[in-house]
Length: 128
Image (cartoon, rainbow, N blue to C red; front, side, top):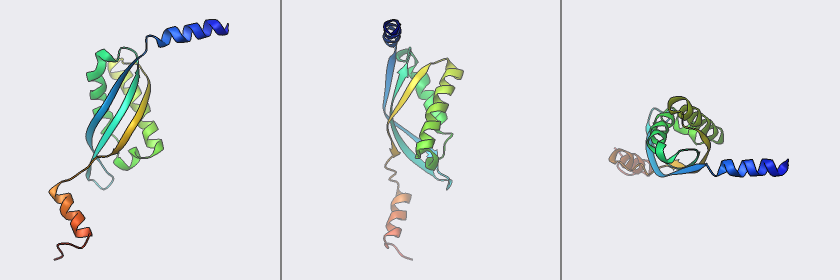
């Protein structure tokens, strides 16, 4: 019986596919009502992912935008994000995802004139 199960398991895994998102960037809101630029790298495992890459990226943009930055940076938030993304892809597009592996999820460099001035003021420069 074990042999039958192992053969079945390995034959099903032959149909599995993976899709890697290496440098996904998006703006999401923080709880302070400020936009925060984030950077994500992830691996999606499932079936027929090569032909559904655009759908995966679309769903990723939609679902990630529904999270606050502070919530997304917690372990619980990351798990909720992965579960919601899997459900959204299945319901909206019929794309079956078995697993999402988050390789990197962090705040991207957010260098703007406004942020630069704010950081300089924190350091004591430009006092009025």
